Amino acid sequence: MEMLNELRDLIERHCDAPRWPTAIPSVTLMRANAPTVPVGSLHQPSLCIVAQGRKRVMLGEKRFEYDSAKYLIGSVDLPISAEVCEASEQTPYLAMRIGLDPATLAAMLLDMPESADEGKPLAGLAVSPLTADLLDPVLRLVRLLDRPRDIAILAPLAEREILYRLMLGPQGAMLRQIALRDSRLSQINRAIKWIKENYERPFRIETLAAVANMSPSSFHRHFKAVTAMSPLQFQKLIRLQEARRRVLAQQDDAASVGFAVGYESPSQFSREYSRLFGAPPGRDAARLRAAAVDSAELTQAV
Figure (spheres, one colour):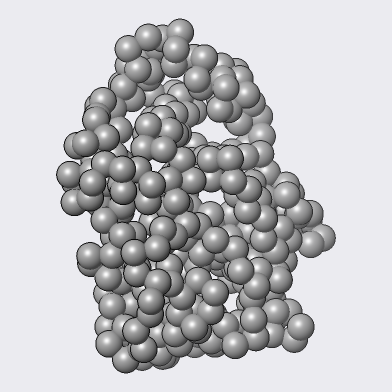
């Protein structure tokens, strides 16, 4: 596809690092010259498009793979594990991320027809086919990197069209719920924010349900639909991803890191860390360093 080839060339020309922020605030470019090991991160609400190569994302037990024929979209902050599984020096992995702005989505809803999907449990991460109608405004947005003086005026127009195409597509219901303050997705997002800010503290489901302003049974059902895991599993992933970041950054010994992220037992911490990452903290950190994974990447989105 001609548009996809142009997008690939633009990303390759403008992206000089594994992760490259651009002059367009919502747009980040990504590049990898070889497959990578799985790395945990907190995926923020965004649209991710691959121009070349292939990526695999794990959310709990759910696997999402996408390449130049598909896009990945996320609606809330989710602890995922991601790896580039197709890349080489000759044909590097080239991708881009566009952040999703709830305020812009909310404004657009005023001009969109109503939907009957409100109240239905929706997943927080999804993969869908990349169509020419969506790729066209994406390409126009990235072209602005060659014309920086036009970004302030034209980028918001292209971004608005991208959101419009997404809202007309198979993930339109998800986009609508990002924008609606009282949607089930927004309610679950409030609980997710609480867990992120208090991940080292124990909690009761009733506490999170109150934060979300939902009954415990409804909250548990919708939380699992959005995140593909229970609130306790979600908290554990947040804890262990933060622990991995600290261990890799050599901020403290493994036992102290375990206590800092909320574990009372060093043996339980080491056991759960090994179960998730395949090796105890020290050995896992050494493996990541050998694979040349910078510690800052542990906090980056897809």
